[in-house]
Length: 163
Image (tube, rainbow, N blue to C red):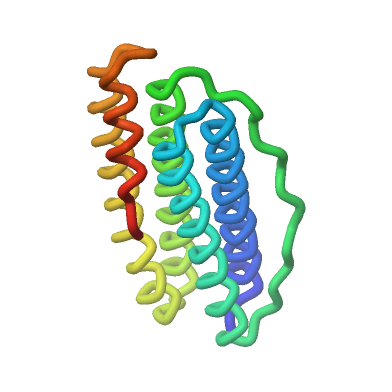
C-alpha cells in the first residue's frame, strides 16, 4: 500500500502532467493556425508524451493500491507570441515540472517509499532530456529572425520529430 501523502502527491503530479499535455496541445493548435505545421507537429508530439507521463503515474498508483483522483485542469493560454517566446515558455515549464518531480522524489525519500524512489528515477532522467531538448530549441530560435526563410527551415526541422 502506498501512503496517503504519497498518493496525494502523485495525484497532484498527474494533474500537472495533464496540464502540461493540455498546454502543448494548445500551443500546437496555435501554430497550426499560424501555418507553421512543423512547430505544431513538435508540440503535438510533446502533448502525446506528457499524456503518456500522466498515464504512467496513473498505472503506478493503481499498481500500488492507491486511488486515482483526476482533478480539474486549468485552461492554457490561447496565444503564445513569437516562436522564441513560445519555446522560452516551454523551457520554463519543463523546469517547473522538474522541480515538481524532485519534490515528489523528496517525499518518497521522507516516506521511506523505496518503490516510488525507483519509479521516479525514470521521471528524473526524462526531465533532464526534456530540459535539454527545450534549451536546444530556444538557443536555435534565438538565431532566427521572425518572418524569415530561416523560420521556415526551422519549422521543417521540428516537423521531423518522431518520438
